[in-house]
Each structure stands twice: as C-alpha cells, then as structure tokens.
Image 1 (cartoon, rainbow, N blue to C red):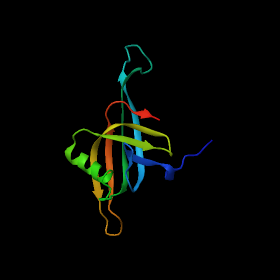
Image 2: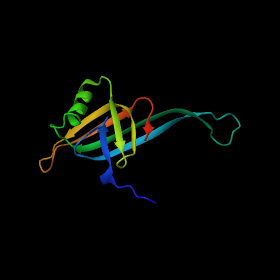
Image 3: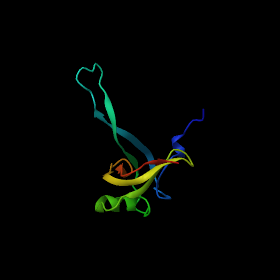
Image 4: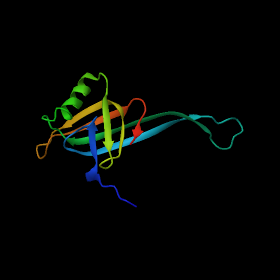
Length: 128
C-alpha cells in the first residue's frame, strides 16, 4: 500500500497555492434523521443532508496576495466564498466552494505569526 506523506499536501485557492501552510483537516458529515417507531428495539435513521467543514493552518504571509491576503479579504467581507482545493498528494484533492467561517491570526514573541482559517463548503464537494 502506498503511504501518503503530509509534505506532499497543499492548500490552494483555485490553482494558487496558499504559501506556508502546514496542516489541514476536512470533516465530511452526513446528518441523520430519527426514524424509530413505537415497538422498535433498535434505533433507525434516515440519511439527511451532507456537508463538509474543517480548517487549515500556516504561517501568515502578507506578501502572498493570491493566498493569505485573498483569504483575509474574504474573511473580512464574507461575500462569495473561495474555490478551495485540499491536496493529499501532487495530483489528488478535495474541492468545492468554501465560505471562510473564521480567521484567527496568532502572534507569539518566540515564534512566527500563524493563522488558522475555518471553512465550510457550500454545495457539492468533489474528489479528483
């Protein structure tokens, strides 16, 4: 089995790499709707709506106009979302339109300024 290595991952806005990212997560969710009836001895559920959300983290780079600056602008304006791609290797990725739900820069006197972006996909999430 081929192992996946984190160093081969990337976060991109469309085809532009967000520089200095070092971590991302994705949670694919399926809502469940209770469908248990009187007399049942086990719970039953219907499949509800699907959704996806997560976060990505990196060192904030104010010179990265197509990455960090674009994300900061989207977080401040919250207008239309971004075309987000989360790469698991050089050619495979999850993608869709994502709303930036949080922008959390963090400064530490002993380290670099980092930022955590929260996102939520709106609509279909694809895997390529």
